[in-house]
Each structure stands twice: as C-alpha cells, then as structure tokens.
Amino acid sequence: MTETFDDKLNRAARQLSTEISPEHDLWPGIAEAIEPAPRRSRWTPMLAQAAAVVLLVGASSGITYILTSDSGGPVTQVSPELVFEQASFGTDYNLGPEFQEARNGLRAELDAEMDRLSPEARADIQANLDLIHNAIVDINAALAEQPDNVVLQQKLSRAYREELTLLRRVGGLTRNVMTRNDI
Image 1 (cartoon, rainbow, N blue to C red):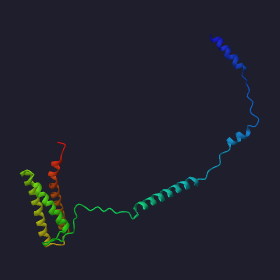
Image 2 (image 1 turned 135 degrees about the vertical axis):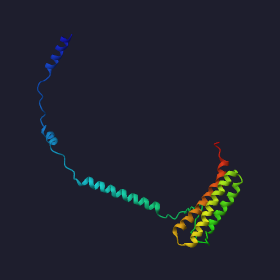
Image 3 (image 1 turned 180 degrees about the horizontal axis):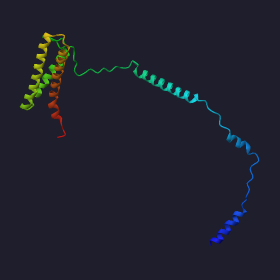
Image 4 (image 1 turned 30 degrees about the horizontal axis):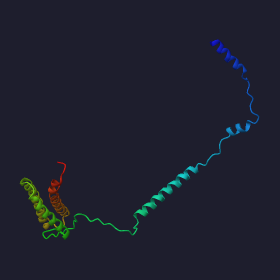
C-alpha cells in the first residue's frame, strides 16, 4: 500500500514545474523595500511630551484656581465644641467667658451623672478631679512668683484642658452605658 501511495506522490511531483520565472517589473518593489523609510526628527517626541506637560500643568492649575476661588456662595463656618482663650496667669487669672460656660455646663452634667455611678467610680473620678485641681492651684502659685515662665503657662493651660476632658468623658460615660444595645 505504501508503494502505490509513493508512486502517486512521485508522479504528482514530476508534474510540478522546476523553474519559476520572475515577474517582469519586480525591481520597483525591491528598491522600495531596500531604501530606508524617511527619518523623523528627534525633536518631535520631545516637543509632544513638553506640550503634554504644559497642558497638564495648565489644566490642574485652572481647576485648583476654580476650586479655591471665592465663588460668592454661602460660607459654612464650623465652630469648635470648646474654645480655649488665652489666660492671664498668676493669682488673679481670668479664663474667658466661653471657657467658664463650657466648664460650668460640663460640671453640671457631671454632677447629674455622678449619682448614677457606683460609689467606687465616684471616688475615682473625684480623686482625679482633686488631683487636677491641686495641680492648677500649685501651678498658679508658681506663676505668681514667675508670671513670665512659659513652661508653667503651658502646664496650666494643659491642666485646664485635662479638667475639661475628664468632665466631658465622665459626663458622656453613663450616657454611653445607657444607650448600648450590644449587650
């Protein structure tokens, strides 16, 4: 069976032409393939990149200007929860009306919340308040002798902030316990 198949292949191969004659006008295609393509300038890609950078910077600057310019629309002002004003230090310190109002409000809230706490928690909170109050008294005494001492002024301001923080935390402590629903 392979002999007959081989004979058929040999006969088909003999019928093929052994010579291929080239087309008449082949040279223009060959010459075109050999000659290099026209060169682009080295500056063209760099100029395109520079133009893209200028466009990007200009667009971002324009957008920033539009977003930050005053458009005359309504202005929303957020006031902080507590305002700390500059205190005049020494024996006759004055802490400003906003501070006094905030402190008095937090102190009233604390007094109302203290009744809901256990005696141990009340004792701990009172001990912390006493510690902060004693620190304020001691710092004020030191400031009476050295009223220009910046470190003492910073410590006094920090002691007042700590007092407000403690009052705020304790005031919200029982509120948070009463509203918990994950128990």
